[in-house]
Length: 109
Image (cartoon, rainbow, N blue to C red; front, side):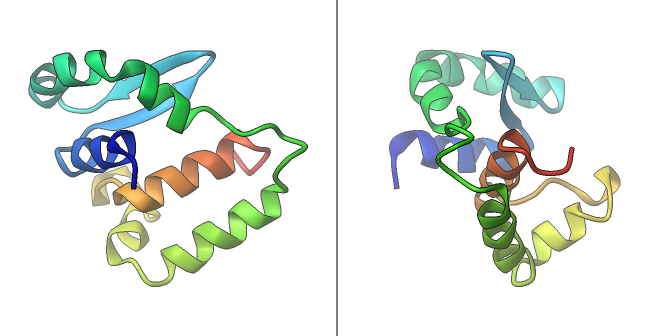
C-alpha cells in the first residue's frame, strides 16, 4: 500500500473525504479535522492527486469498478451504513477509493 493510500485511509478515519474534481484535490469534512490535516495533505498533494485521479476511461470498464465496489461493500459494515445516507457516516478508506474510481469512470453519479 502506498504512502498516499495510507494517508487517505487515515484522513477518512478522521472524518475527511478526499476527491479529485475538475483537476483539483477537494477536501471535505468537519472544519477542525480539515484544519488539523491541512498541512499534511498539502505537503502530499501531488501523491494524493496521483492516487485519486481517475484512470483513462478506455482503460477500465465502469462495470469492473462497480463489481469491485460491490464485492467490498457487501462485506464492509462501514460502507453499508454509508450507503444509506450521509447521516450514517463515511465509507471506509478502501470503499471510498473504490466508490470514487467508479464514479469518476462513468458510474452512476
